[in-house]
Amino acid sequence: MKKLIPTLFISLSVIALFCATSIINITADAKPNPSKSCDGVHEFYGNPLADSGRGSDLRILFFVGERENILGCFNNTRGVKVAPLQKELDDKMYSKKDEQLILDIVKELNIQDPYLANGGI
Image (cartoon, rainbow, N blue to C red; front, side, top):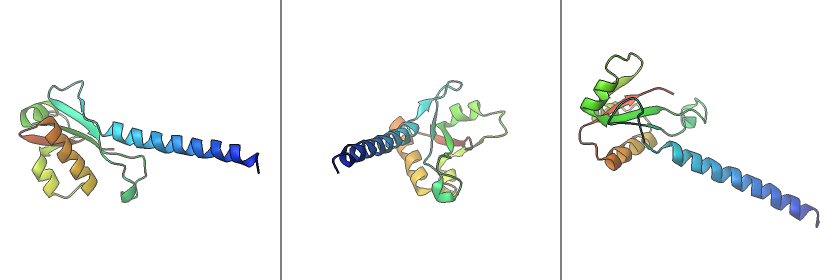
């Protein structure tokens, strides 16, 4: 029994460390980062898509910014859809968690005329 307690403690410690790291990584991914190639545009990852059946590690890459900045950034890009934020939310394409995340980030960045671009997964 005395040999089992240290082994159990180590096992539980490793599991706790793994869980804490996972939580930290989820929070870090949701932080908006200024785009390196486009002024006034921020990029961030949405929540994991496990609920959609696509896999737990898959996340949508979002870009958000003022209309003029984001349209200029993706002007000649075929693979990225750019639209007014409210139109995107009205289309109900995203999970409630992602919708709330997007709204929180727009509020945090104080974007007055928000446009959203979906960079895929």
